[in-house]
Amino acid sequence: MSEPVIKTVNIKRAYDVPGGKFYALKGINAVIPQGTFAILKGRSGSGKTTLMNIIGGLDNPTEGEVYFNGRNMSSLSERDRENLRRREMGFVFQTVSLIPSLNAFQNVEFSIRMAGGKINKESSQRVEECLKLVGLGSRMNHMPQEMSGGEQQRVAIARSLAHRPKMLFADEPTAELDSAMAAKVTELFKSMTRKEGITVLMTTHDVGLMGAADMIIELENGERINAGEEKES
Image 1 (spheres, one colour):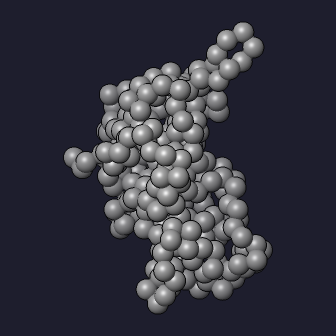
Image 2: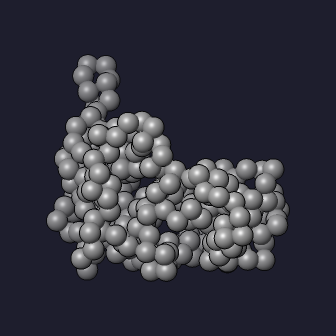
């Protein structure tokens, strides 16, 4: 088995509420190896988005530790965590949030700029490669408003890959897509793990997408209910 990209140790997340504390996460342990397509499964309110935000360095756990490529995220300064997110992580959200004044090529290129990469012939080739990878090689010069919702989501995926991250986080990326497009996007994520060696963590409550996963981490009421089942059989 590959070395883990992600390891969580007893992750808890509590919020102050009238009369005490509410625990959105209640001690989550998980190991995600490199090159794995992992799905965070659970109903709304199960804690899956909270866990993803903590693993991605967007939030801090109340208790426990997250290790990214062996580095303890809690030991990093906020600036170091921000640099880590920009350079080694990619994010795809339910809301696409493309920059409306930029075409598809420019939107994807923007992630390379944000990661501190140089804009040159090599970066342009990488942008084209990523857009072709998501089936949009003929749509590079189209503006977001000229594209369908599914096409915009695929631009967002290409954007998240352009700077060659080690880890891609996708939070309910198929929620606004029809079932056929959702299946295509999910298969695309799986193919990325094979072609790019990237590790993907996607949240969803759509049971129809589970078959594509290498690993399923299932949450219910802030607890992992399939602990020990690190690999889907």
